[in-house]
Image (cartoon, rainbow, N blue to C red; front, side, top):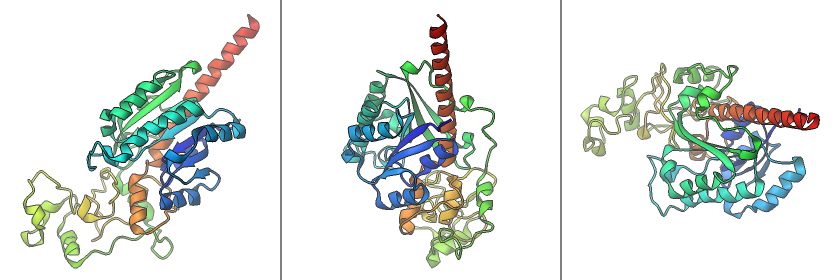
Length: 357
């Protein structure tokens, strides 16, 4: 039986594609304009057609014809537009040109008419007017549900809240689940995972054999701050002489995770685009006097141990932080695949009934 097909828009380094492949999908095409992220995607998913250009210049009708000729109707369109404008860490500027990328999705939906759609992003997207218009437009032909999920509930060893929108073509005769977690089959392992579980996978790795298993080289004063931080602590552990001027102006409840050590017995904090930089959050190793390595951050994001990230250190760090955790994508793909199977079974029943009528 052929695998269901998927198109990954705003694919980044390929976190969603990896998860969908793990769920049994054939990701036939992807779109990503960032040069390094596109190279990472190609290195890990060489069999997927990659359009490494700005999505605003990808001709949706031409792509629809190409995919249709290769294998019929697309089963799933998935997308994660750049989240920085809507993130709690972003600028929140209404005139950020990336906001408009959400609206570009509509023309892909109109031209490709996928059987199902999955959108993933930060919860702040929920209030963006263009996002609301997109969802309203999807209601015309798709049954749509949206919900905010916590990645830890799906076996990701990291706290990461996301809004998930699932659209199902009304003609399929099935409806999207109101509770994604409850919709997962028993075969999907939902055992809680901690940061320590992820970090334990690097025991056999070394910078000599894995260039991504390296941390930033801290300045002397940064190293002193790290050494002064206890496990599970943060900037409040620092003696006065090691505090930055900006720290002294903060409320004791603000930015407490800066220079913080990760607690290995709990899920890690959200891996951001600065997820190996101690001055940007709780990204210090639990016991060693250093920040996380790129590989450790990628493992917390649930990438495979051998996953490649192209470009320099800063670029790889950004790609890792921007990615959809493959484990979360696998969960979403599993739900969608079961929905597709249910739709196919319902269609087969209708055909059988019409033949016997």
